[in-house]
Length: 285
Image 1 (cartoon, helix red, strand yellow):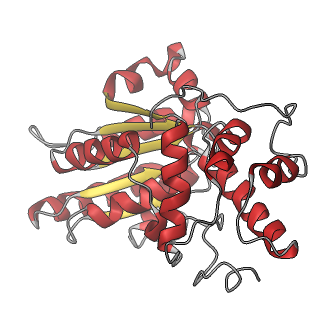
Image 2 (cartoon, helix red, strand yellow):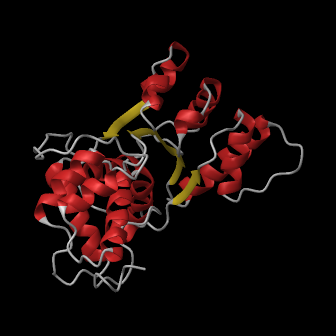
């Protein structure tokens, strides 16, 4: 609706993960590099945590683009599963055929055969489990058992657990000590700081076709950060609504007052009294 008004080719702040809009913050880039390294070196378990809206899903898609084309990848996003359902979902993702009524042990045997075949073909195998904080402890223990599929020198499958901060807390359960000890890399995605929030907004505008004319007034960025605390998903929601408000009001420059107004209309944001914004320090991401 507002794209032409602001000289954009498309909406820059949509909520759907799109790797074209990936913003290479320091922490996202670092996490991506470490994951690629861990997979290429067959290091086994990797855990990535982050708050809701911190960019985990986009990061996972960027990861798969970075891997060698011969790497076999699979993603499990529905994590409200039993242990057997998790193994069955893994086989389905790798397109491993099984007969009806097979046991979990038989399915693991099929998976092991597949992994050995891939090793012989010099192909790596990656399993990414998203929203892993939803897995019950005994199901997480099953994930550990899958990691036992290995040769004397190499892991046959590289497993990435990705989820909200509760995942890290769950891994510290006494019953998951062995799984926790298998984790070779844990990375937490914090929020953007003020400078990164500004760069993130401008990056998305440029990808969407911004022609160089300022769309957000300089003082608007401090308020964007103030209300969103640098969480990318919240930044997207606030900026999208601000552009719509600017379009409706025939204002081609989004001022701080527009951000202040729009923030009060979004339930996801915490409304704070209007004040002269002060730059805050946040976790570099």
